[in-house]
Image (cartoon, rainbow, N blue to C red; front, top):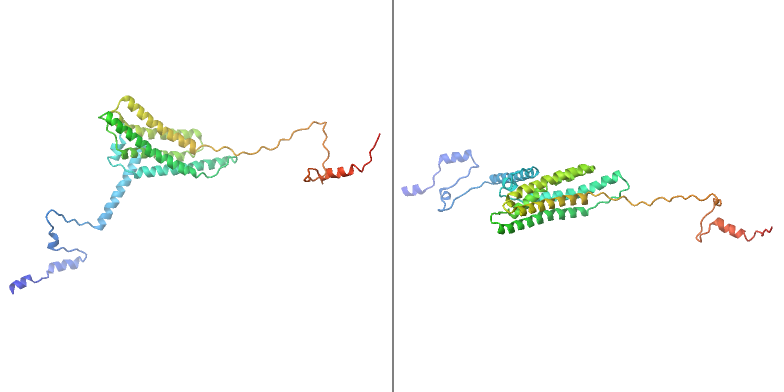
Length: 308
């Protein structure tokens, strides 16, 4: 009987009191604590997981903003890939930067023509929705095809020069994507109808963007020959300049004035030619004769011929 009493379940007052004080507390048995060898039991709370996701999202936004600031303020000796990307390239920033730039280009291009029509009524304006497509195709092709060609060229040069270590394709896309951010506020400032001020903003934006590319690519291309490095950096800057000039001339070109027919010019007749008086009831008929002329034609045969 003693053995049967030992096997019976007993209630412990301490555990009962603790459960009464904290009813939300979870209890575990000893069998649950024993796990097979080599396994670790991990309990994750739902609230903690949401907090971790929020922290990760907040850190990603902070990293994107930090990379945008780095692209706006390039510094010599400050590598964008090493100091900003830190082996963590993303496509979120480049994608939305290109999309924003395309829409801003199309919208400001239409607004420029609309404001020009307000100043000069002779300019004929109609909404040009095709510019959204043109801007999107141009920006995305540039932001993807040029980095692809650059990455392929650097990979080819890596086989020629063993010390040459190029960036990855995603890192190259990131560098080009973030370098285009400076053109977004510049395009908005191009709404100011002052030509020399527009060109000043364009040159400053191009200088900042191209400088960021050169400072980032220089640690890679400096291991190559001087001629190859100079040609490569020159082509990079030239393509960047062509993109800026193309956007300026295509999206912000003034519309030609609407064709208005000039008013008829009155020519003076010699004083020897006398015009017959016009009768107030003279009306043109389909055969080209006026009513007055037809009346005179009917009266002329009835008049006698006067002979001297």
